[in-house]
Image (cartoon, rainbow, N blue to C red; front, top):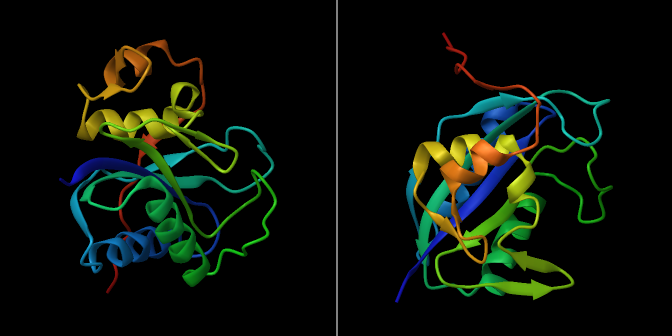
Length: 168
């Protein structure tokens, strides 16, 4: 039975829009993943390492039979394909970042994978686009919806709608 899964995507170097769209396309062309909906794209201030360019972020809702470990490998593969080095510095600028935010019914706590993503509760750049898609989604083990988490979020960084650049 397919699971509803939410992924957070971000990019802050190079052609940020193209990296986000390429990652979404790479997910959607797979036979074992169905991209259902994508939130708007938001331009956001860096949260932890503030000495870097602004990010573009979005959240994608998909349906898949892949288990979380397989989904993690898909995300890592897309990051590599789009040029993110396998060995990268944490919180450094990046061409693309794909994070598994939540699985509909699964909780995971492994050294290399935590679901729900532990940063979900304190990151407006995740909660704002996620609230656009699924405001009533109940995050596992929190007892709170995305909308409720957004209200309680301590993050004060700027998150604003990004308007896509028109090409000639």
